[in-house]
Length: 50
Image (cartoon, rainbow, N blue to C red; front, side, top):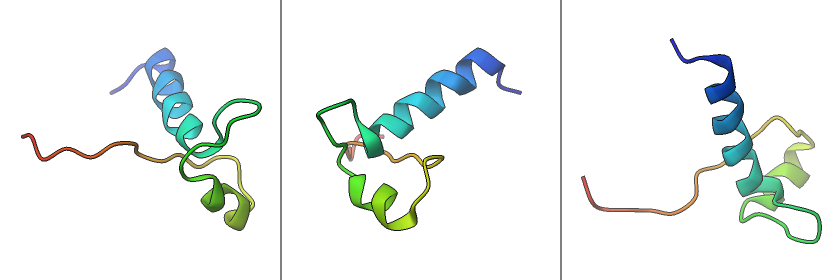
């Protein structure tokens, strides 16, 4: 089970990939706009390393 402070940090990090900060839109800002929701998050970056 994941503790509450950790879930907050994970959700905040994933959410910032969508909405960013004031004056900056995250890479998935269209998803936030089109879905009209603020409780979504997105992964950033890609790796082929295992």
